[in-house]
Image 1: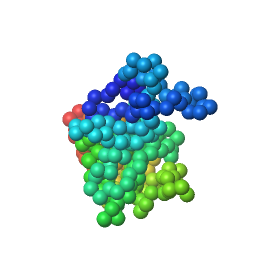
Image 2: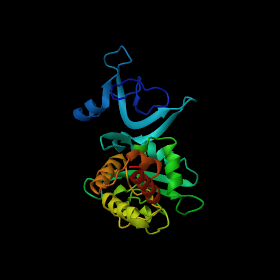
Image 3: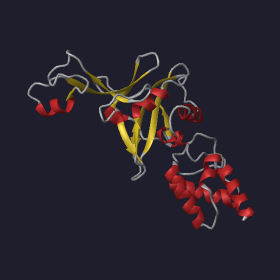
Image 4: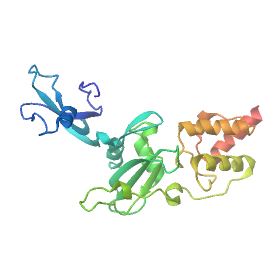
Length: 260
């Protein structure tokens, strides 16, 4: 871990290599040597070093090590540290997902969010976003589940054959539109649709659209409650997690008004 202590079984950590095979450092590069070749705290020899690989992984119950990407794939969103490699590894375990890469994008200032790009194998078609989200939620906390999922025919590569992250496209309306559009009905749904569209920076919101599938998260949920109260409506953030579709949440909001 960050304190150079071994992590428990199943916990993500950074891979270090120790032993007599480790070199003394980089030739004529003392700064890089100091960064990568650290004193080995597990050996008595004061000259023993262990090499910081920059790779992330974790031990599996059978003793093998699962590779989870690079530590430079770590990002922070809303103060939470996120391992992009771990999300990618979980996503590729979903049936028919062939390749996956996850980025933290900020296409709108102040609106950083996780976006997953994936290719498929046999079907070569876009997969159900709700199924992908549910798969990841079974293994990861909510804040590590991407807000958007973008299907690509192939991942862009640089001339030397490596992933070209800068060439990954910005999410389009198709990525956001995961449910068939149906216009909001009634004053509450229409008001909610307008506020959701402003908060989530989307063109329109249908009555069956899902707050979190459109890029919502817990902080935006709190902002939503504030906006609704400004409009004179009683609102409950817990109800949004229970009924995250526009129609479902509007129905709960209307019931709360009747009770009051």
